[in-house]
Amino acid sequence: MRTTGYTIGVADLEASDRGRMFQLLSDSYLGVKREAFERDLAAKEHVILLRSSEGEIVGFSTQVRLRLTLPDRTVLAVFSGDTIVSERHRGSFETAREICRYFRRAISEYPKEEVYWLLICKGWRTYRVLRLLFRDYSPRADASDPLAFRDVADAFGNTRYPGLYQSSSRLIVFPGEAQRIRPGSPEAIDHRRSDPGLLFFEKANPDHERGNELVCVAPIRQDNFTAAARRFAGYGER
Image (spheres, rainbow, N blue to C red):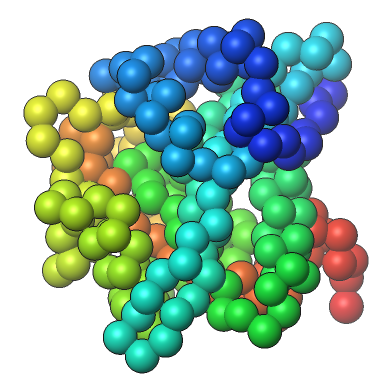
């Protein structure tokens, strides 16, 4: 099904857009609350919207750029928040394409900056986007966890989720009824699979079904993009 992705400012969303986004989120997750949705949205700068050929919003991803203070330097981070694509349109790569264009704009606007992507994952489907877009990212099954990546994760977690972020596990652990994946949804782990990345994610975030989020980090650089991400961003092949 044909879809179109584009980015707009949070302030430019119509009330009907917000309502449709909340509906999509509620369809995909349990424990979704309108107040929390609006609070999260207010803390973002931009929204990537995915529309069907009929003009209906069928997916979205919220984005914000953050300054993070590390022990020895300051870096720029792109934090992607709620990201949803309706089940009928999950074959489209339009959201990934627009996210990569967003990455390209960030490194173009801040050419002398160290820029990282921060993605928090409570579902396997979200986690596997990292390997689609990046050569190097953390945490992952087949590589050590560089101190630089851990410093970025800690700076983000301690600033954005104080009291909830656990540095030792890289997890954000929410008390009570947290937003969580629906059992049997595409985000839920299929235990019939033996994908090493899936097995690693399940080990790294054993209580993901309760809504715990794994903080993941990837450097946003041209040389760290996969071939797919380079095409999505518009760099073309080398």
